[in-house]
Image (cartoon, chains in turn orange, blue):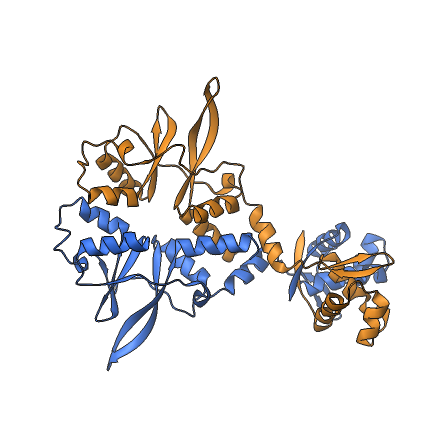
Length: 215
Length: 215
């Protein structure tokens, strides 16, 4: 178990002393504070256990720079895509743009995934639809395959990745949604993706709310 | 400063002993561990400082149930809308739907805010545009005011709210974007909102990435 501790003023002063004088022995830290070594022993124990200070025998104490933020970061890095993914909304590449838009409204999602023969072939978002709805394509006759972003230009995630890695991809590629895929061999040398989930900015927002509400 | 500590096996055992026997004195904890009181004194100090145990004079130690998750939650609750808001994208209520869509594409946002006389009067999203683009309205002649969600049915946030409160609103109301507003008196008894920022699921995703990447 990991716990958190609010440092005392004296402990904060010890950190500052070590920062400026490292390596420094406990005798010298005590001298600077005009205290005895045994008085500050519990403080040094706490600061060493927390990893904020490092002690080397016969040399003294070092400041490691570890902070509470790195602790939050560690907790966040434990959460996997497999733990938080939701169900993917998928249409076939031959579906009309109109049918794909209807699916998007019915399922209330911002992005849908497109498959061909059961494997991921594209991704299409509200933005793509809007561009083409005002463009003048015949929405009833044109297949969604015509307007989608096509493989291999699709950013994906997998069950084993962390939600943080997936969130980094959403931000870096300026997209709203990532298909969660499983790679399969279809014939010798050829790979394809089965779509098994989705991670979106809504997933991340809901996770943030759960962390903040302590759930 | 708050730091985090990985508990030792003995400290974890002390927590279990207190959980099952509370209130319990340090003498009795030491007895159960077949150790001296002075050996476990630093352990009790750490567990009390962290808030995981509570000590009442002449009564003994209690288990409080505080965990690391409540610590992450505390950190998240410190972040304010004012710290993370971005610039709002705004059009006037008299603008055509077409011009509003162009603004949305140019600024690459999913939701824009609509004002009348400089004050918030509505909100319009890609979803609203898409519904009407395939509906058959004349996009060049119809003002955006016709299709927007109108005040007072708009969920807003303010500079002083926490990002967590804003994220809760995004999830509860199933929306992608919240205008950050400032309430002003326009004439006696009448209030209106000036739009001064936006908080979106992208804001939350970026914050999550920053927390996870320890920034």
